[in-house]
Image (cartoon, rainbow, N blue to C red):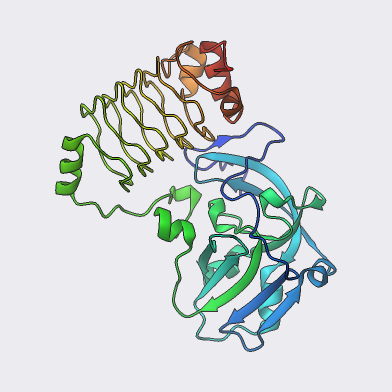
Length: 345
C-alpha cells in the first residue's frame, strides 16, 4: 500500500482502539481428540500435524488489517503463525488442484475456500498468536487461518483441515447466507446476487408479511410497509430506503448490511435483530425498540451528520441497550449518546 492509498476499504468503520468484536461462533465443538491439522485431498503426501508440533516451529510475525463484512475494521493486528504454503509445499500440491478448502472444528462444520493461485498470492498464515499471546478461543484459538486482503469470513476459526480440491466447495457463509465467494473488501464483494424473482418480490411486498423468509437483497425502497411483519426474516443487504415501517414487527430479523436510510420506523420493534453493518442514517427511530439488537458496524449518521447533529432521529423513547451502543464505532457511539442520554434502555 502506498502512502496515498486509503487504509479503509469502502464503507468500513474503525472499531474503538483495543477492541476486537467477536462475530459468529464463540467456541469450537466439544471434541476430546488431540488437536491436529490435516493436509489432505490432492496432495502427494497427506499429513496430520499435531498442534504442539506446529507451534514448535519458528513462527512468522505479520501485521494485518481486519475487515469484517459487517462494515467494521481493525487496523494493525499483530499475528504469529506459520505460512500455509510451508505445509502445502511439504505435502506436494498436485497439478489437478485448483482450490483450497479450510474446515473448522466447529459445531456447524464451518468452512470456506479460495482459488489456489489467489491463495498463493495472498500467502495466508496459520495463526497461533495475537499480539504476542496465545490466540483467544473466541477469536479462533488455538489455531485459525488469517487471509489478508479478504473480508474476515475467509479467515476460518479453529482450523483442523486443509483440503486441496479440483472443484470449488462453497463454505458455510457463502452457501448458507449468500456471502460473496470473492470477499474482496476493496470491491465491496459482500453478497452474491439474489435469486428472488421480481414477481415474487412484489407479491411479498404487497402481503406485508416477510416472516421467516430469506429475502436477501430485496428492494423495498419507497414502499408503504406500515405494520410489516418480518419476524425472523433474513434481510441481509435489503433496501428499505425511505420506506414506511411504522409499527413494524421486525423481531429477530437479520438486517446485516441492510439499507434503512431515511425510513420511517417509529414504534417498530427491532428486538433481538441483527443490525450489524446496517445503515440507519436519517431513519426515524423514535419509539422504536432495539433492545437485544446487535449493532456492530451499524451507522446512525454519516461524518457530516456527526458534526452537525443530522442523522437518525432518536431520543429517550428509542429503547437501546448500553452494551449494544458500546459495540458501535466511536463516532457512531458519540452520536447516539448525544441524542439518548439514558443509554441504559
